[in-house]
Image (cartoon, rainbow, N blue to C red; front, side, top):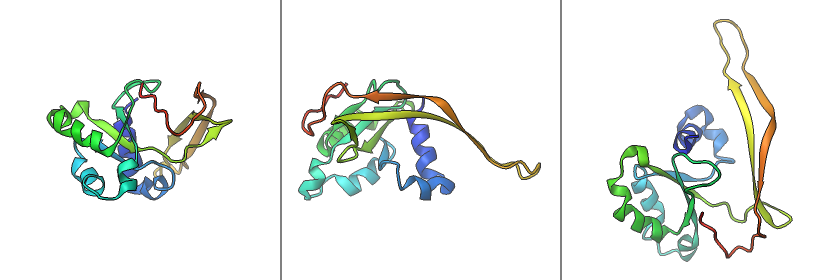
Length: 153
């Protein structure tokens, strides 16, 4: 359950890059990508940019444990107080929050779908295979989303 590895695979692999741009949130691995993040988001006089919220996620964790919501200024403060001295194993991922979020009856949700991909083997003439599990997980927020309240657990 390495979120940083998954993010890297989805965004830095030239084979998947064009596909991931359509559905993968903009993200940065901090502290490594801080200069890219700050060049686009810190110090901007754009009021809309200041209101953008970011989800900070620990490298590993289950059930959103360790996730927190932060503004650009809070990330800036975090970088200079903690992240700049962090061991690379303790890096975090900083992803843009999709706005407006998709909801079911006003509640935010997430789907965990399990897929296994086997790349083709050209030497043996075996085609690529994709297997989609019939089991998955649906998480539905306990409270109706109002766009204001943020729970950062």
